[in-house]
Image (cartoon, rainbow, N blue to C red; front, side, top):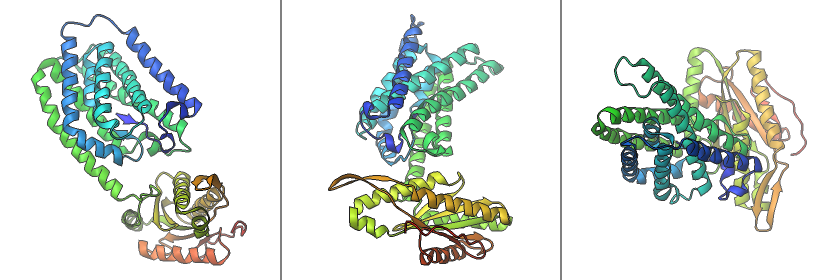
Amino acid sequence: MDEPLSPTSGRSELWALPRRAVVVVLAVEASAVALVVAGSATPPPGAIGLAVFLTVLSVVHTELATGIERIRRRAAQTAYFDLSSVWTFAAALLLPPMLAAAVIAAVYVHLWQRVWRPAKVPLHRHVYTTATVVLAANAAHAVVQGAGGLPTAAADLGGVAGIALAVLLYVLVNAVLVAVVIVLTSERPGLRDIFGGWDDNAVEIATICMGALAAVALGSTPGLVALVLPPILVLHRAVLVRQLEEVASTDAKTGLLNAAAWQVQGTRIVRRVHRSRGTAAVLILDLDHFKLVNDSYGHLAGDEVLAAVATELRNSVREQDIVGRFGGEEFVVLLPDLAPGPDGNTEMRTIAERLRKRVAELVVPVGTPDGDLSISGLSISVGGAAVPNDGTTLEQVLNAADASLYAAKRDGRNLVRFAGPVEIPGPRSGN
């Protein structure tokens, strides 16, 4: 289940969050408690034993995967997805809301002790995540009960449809509730920051589907549920490998792709554009007079400026654009899938100018030995080149964009210049 890990919500106390976020968090937690209380009733025979069995399975699962999960949690960049949903979703389908909530609480208390607290995750985040899972489980339970319960035969299409709808609703309720808090505690987050990547969500859905299979097995042949553990542990390791690969391709200071990873993706996209006779562009951006920032405020403040610029660039481009850090104060953006001809040139101009203006408007709060202060008056010079007009390989286009960048520097900085006839006049102020 996903945990809100937005970069600006890393403060340890709930009351340090924005007021709107605090209101949402408390409202969601109160709603979860109210639903559990309202649904309390005498459990059916065997339900308590089943709840205990699911809790034991979850504890065994967590203990076997603790080392992997701690590494994954530390490596997570935005929303973090654990794989405990296999048991919480099974509880949602099999148990009345009060007992399902008890299983969920037990699962997350154990996760807190073994994974989240050692990773120094704020307690209020974990409590909120538990509340969202309780609400998602209630929604899934209501859907399955409305469809007549779990399927009992191959021809029970209503029961199968009920489980499918329960999976969808479980994912949707949890994702929306987590997304709301991330939006309220972050400045202009991207879709990946809010909802996680496609691969993350695919893992979450696969885990919940395994929970559905576990529930069906428990309803008919309980011993078969032990077969869920081996594939879920293999899935843990597969997700860890993918996550570590992602970390290895990321620049530590900015969270952008590093130069090597950007070039791998860029080469692949340029080849695709060339084969399809499409249009793309490369922008190289260099922070003007960045050495003055380091000399005046220190290298730690300089790192905060780089991170702020990186965030601004990532939030100011299109979803499909690839942003990376080339080293030092230099960034690079690949713009695939541009319109052919003049429309593509116009799109290049628009994006490049937008990036230049956004950086010029940045105010970066930093801590220094002399106290907290804000750094403003930043500017970037931008050089660009197009595929295939200025080259058919990534190296050729980078060379052309680099020459354009030096033209922007030579003409006074805080300017955008493109190779060939696509040249943009711009202001010379703020150099």
